[in-house]
Image (tube, rainbow over all chains, first blue to last red; front, top):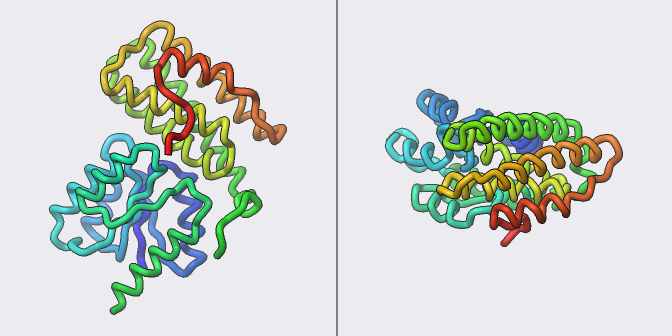
Amino acid sequence: MNILLVDDDSFFRKFYATKLSAHGFTVQTVSGGKEALEYLDKTQPDAMLLDLIMPQIDGFEVLTHVKQMPQLAGMPIIVFSTLSQPQDIERAKALGALDFVNKSSLNFEALVSKMQALSKKRAV
Amino acid sequence: MNNMDQSALSEYKDLYFETAHENLKTIADNLAVLRADPHNTRALELFFTTAHSLKGKSKLMGYVPVADAARLLERTGRALQAGSPLTQTLSSALLETTSSLQACVTKLQTAGEPTDMAQVIARLEHESGQKAQETL
């Protein structure tokens, strides 16, 4: 399963890319919304992990753009949040995000389970 | 994989400190811009999004005082973005908190323990009307 991980912080990019790769996922990382949209214009990953709070083009804007890209219809998007702003999660879901994970939680298993469930769904 | 514990995070300490110092420099640089030009939207955005990043990774690593102070910076930045004024006393408290955070992260890195942030956090809470503690 190919995952696009979008986060402006290099710590989270490296941390989660390493962890997910160890579980057999192929992870491509980009550092912002602009880079994500450029990547998605050329490539269709199986899923996207998207940070919301980023400078310039934030996660909400990425979600808005993705909605207008028919080739990405059905691509599951999981919002990467620190749960500081619950209203952000609701707004992201209204824009098409499927689910969210708390990226500051030590419960990495929850993220892996969600990604594995998505992978199985896509394989059916 | 079971839930991670702190020992599983130890291999990420170097990356944490490297990026935390970068974050704090970005926060300090953009605070300096805001003190001269409080309506600089780009500096304000970088100020609070970087504080948001620092908060998240500090919480993940278990560095609670750093996460709390960074959360307070983020919330104060969001309030400024929403139109709250950057008064002289608030500006001074933000500067003090940022400097104390830099010292705190350095002490965590070199001595393995944080400095006491309680006083500067209390002052910034008072000046900003925001809270450092997680509300969820």
